Image (cartoon, rainbow, N blue to C red; front, top):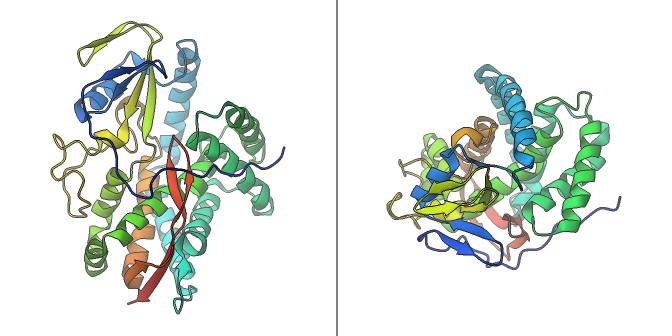
Length: 343
């Protein structure tokens, strides 16, 4: 199977999103579109709106997912997260100490990518001798998630996912192939989006350097402001009345996470990037019974990387063009040229 390059996004290189409004029906995609916070929240918690592409997929998917969620929650216990935290802090510090800051560096290439790959190996116990193939497969799976409208890419990603699982001693482990993709690819995209936002808001970055205790709230604001993914999909397993509309059995609802996270009825100064924001409740890691089961691990890893970088460097500024990758599902800056000044 040939490698597949990740698609390049044609979207503008900023974090602007459409303003939320009333639910509406998209005739092209044959889906109801929810953009307001209150509507997205209702949909995510509604028992008859389920993840899946069709009603027929839901029973099998729900059963499999429920069992895997329980096993994953057990694997991501607080004590285990604490063990990983200590190791990942040391790994982040080691990479940072080796950075040459006398000239601009690519933050993605020289810190984020190598560090998230270490996270992936640390958590999943993947075989280092398979690094090249693991990464090739993970990139392909992630690319299909970033551009869900490409059916050819979707089919290739299914084959890649099967091969990826077989590279782990226990393919049924809750922290095997999918976790490797999430940590080596999705986590990297989350960090690159978040750190680009920080670099674009130097006063916020300076505040974080002065007070590293802001790291947890900084992570939440990065997740809210730079939503990844931009949308989630649900299918109605029975006729469902919600937010003043009726969705027939089998009808699709697309939840615009990015817009809901900027809803001024929920977040004051919603388009302002503010690390001291105390109003949580964003949807970037989902919500309700189908929320991201690895959210605690993602938050911990983002906090470790963000705190370590912010403490090590008193300031940073972009120096060159940011190169974006991704598609309609989500996007991220793959190249972040930056000048960093050590503390």
